[in-house]
Image (cartoon, rainbow, N blue to C red):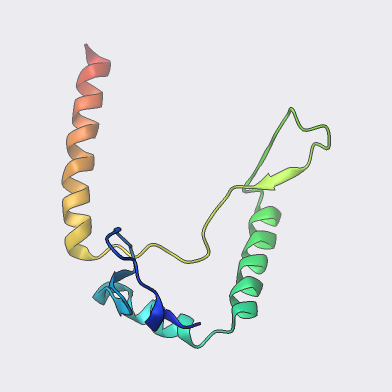
Length: 106
């Protein structure tokens, strides 16, 4: 895969800062993915789908006449959260949990 030509432009991207420039926390993942052929990434995705189906990580759409179990949607490419990013997220999550608990107690 040619990640060096990918350009997130002005949009936020979890993996890249700018054109062909991975975020430091995502660099090992990008290097690993650069060595994969597109069909290999698809094979990994299919293997994960089968594993999740066997583990029962599924849901049913009851309005669907076929009644087929569906695997919860997921992305085979993980979201990398650096320590610094997580510190900010953690503070916000704790604040929201505290606010929700106060709301529920009211």
